Amino acid sequence: MPDRDSMPYRPCVGVALFNRNGQVFIGSRKLEGDPDNSAGHSAPWQMPQGGIDRNEEPLAAARRELWEETSVRSVQLLAQTGDWLLYDLPDELLGIAFKGKYRGQRQLWFAFLFDGTDSEIDVANPGDGSVAAEFNAWRWEDLENLPDLIVPFKRDIYREVVAAFAHLPAAIRQKS
Image (cartoon, rainbow, N blue to C red; front, side):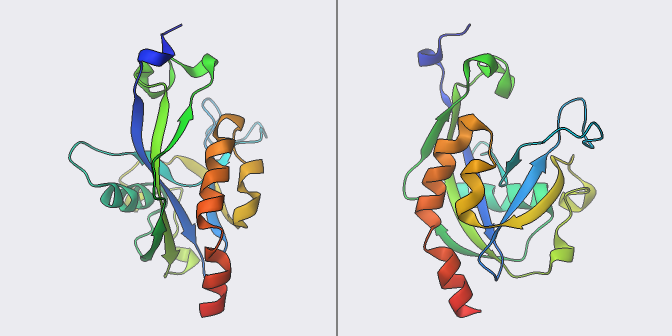
């Protein structure tokens, strides 16, 4: 097994996309070997996230990742986490995930308000069909439920995201 302590964290962004009801977008990850979930396995849910390209600003990366995973562009920035949040890969993924280069991710999270209609969301052909799909399904979910829906090794970071953005659902509903 690689030496975890000598490996860096992958710089990454995450996106909490809120609708006007104060719920957030979550996507069901395609399972390797079963991309359409035809075997009926329970795929992990997560919010959009991804790596920051070289010389890319985190906010630009968040907007790009959101578009590449959902085709969504109709958003307003609401908030972002103040600090980078870290998570480590479990031992069984260390040296395998992220091309074996990283011990986990350091993420800056952004909250956006979705101004469009649900028909704008296209996880089957994201990025106007120019990007490979990462999700095979999606839904709106209450923010506080997310840690229970995420793969176990990301639960702590999702708890931090929920805490950082906990004030937003009520504020959004109040404005709508």
